Length: 429
Image 1: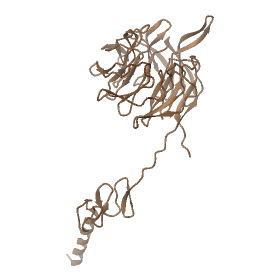
Image 2 (image 1 turned 180 degrees about the horizontal axis):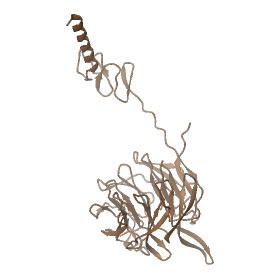
Image 3 (image 1 turned 90 degrees about the vertical axis):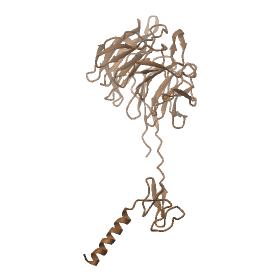
């Protein structure tokens, strides 16, 4: 090999070595000399993350300016703004009904209570009519009738997209009847009934697709202890372990690990309870959980993004806000909600905040107001109020942080057919 070829090979090797050397730790001198004031040797600089590098290299989140890596400011997040928008009203006034979002974006409205004028005056009358409401088109159409007129029932969407209507209160009292709506066919079918008639109960979809029905009222605040589970695969109900504390007007929330938290409500003796218990579908057993500091009923319970549960308001403690930590089985007092309420609604937004709105105030009068809770700061903020005050309405959570609110009781305790939607407002130009 010639001398020139050897020299070229050496130069290439030196160049490659210089380009590919790993970053040097601070305080480790290299061929460039002793460390400077920044802790890096001459000819190198701190990349912003503690490593000494050459050239204009910087760690993610830093930019090379003036011979050094400086933090690149993150663009300020633009606040998401929301507003209420009025929609075409329901086909008739109703309250204590259900509204269930379907996979195709439509909303199934079923049952409820309305007021009819008779020779004896205004009488409350349960409904058997169902409606398909299309929030996108602003239209609605009849969706047939459920097998029995009812209010204060439970509704749950199954994994296959069908919707179950379970139990409720009819003209003859508590009902055991169950109906299933198939949105692919826009048709109802009668399902096997509950073993125990009930209303003011909860129905929770489990992770495996089954449905857990808990508590309720069988007549005159007589609580139901029996727990029932519906299996869509077999189309049958089975009985499971009874509640430790029978209750109605309680709240039920599926936890991140698949268990179900049941909290508060009216217990035996018509006494408001603060007790809580957790159902584990893997063992079919209930275990006692930490009780609420103050007994409550007609409160809301909402699972937050981090798995904790926010419980707000209710009878006895209308301004109370508590956070349950399933990992510790503890309740933590949060800041009081600015405006106390019960029989309200709660929804989780995509940014992790919780919207609490409507319901009845401590004086029993329906509310328009809404409040936002931020779990990151533990603080409340006012949100835009609904166009009209209402309680005992239905809520359907739609895609894109939109919330459809239908019907309810107004400040005159009269059923309304008003329909509104909560939605993000367009960004400012």
